[in-house]
Image 1 (tube, rainbow, N blue to C red):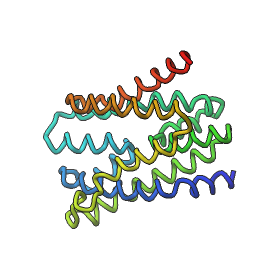
Image 2: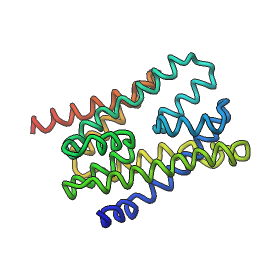
Image 3: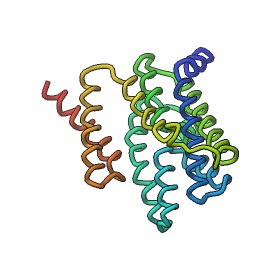
Image 4: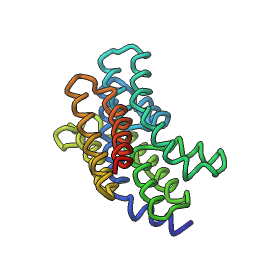
Length: 224
């Protein structure tokens, strides 16, 4: 178990550092959107989903009704159902407490590194939980730091902090590619998400891309 925990830090530290940086950017954005430092931290603790939190803050700043904010967050996080279903094959036999903790800590980053580790080792939960918990700590620390000490002192766009979350997702996809099928899934997802974004349906772009791309990959495999 200890070796898996050490491996999680050794392989995941660049993502952990990025999570703290992006968490700071969120903390700054939340304060600029009218939230207090405690409200920003509370959102990071309860929701713990970067893209959904940024979308929620943007809607709040625009004066959107609460039902729209909540609906948008839920819609953006529907992709977690797909990720959770994939992890169930590896966590299905674990106690309910472990599975609930794994579900709470589930993010794009923890899923990507966790599923990659399962592909290599085939078993064990220590790697996933160690990295996911460390990611939670970095994200929430960054949020509190950005909302409390950094807000109002720097412009996130000036230093490229607003692009950090996008760069993280690109890096995750690149690290997760193991063959032609993975490349096809990534390209299809990018095309679907891009088309929907240009069409003004950015809210459902991620969910739609995450649902369509695997279906195309499965059809391709069966054809081969």
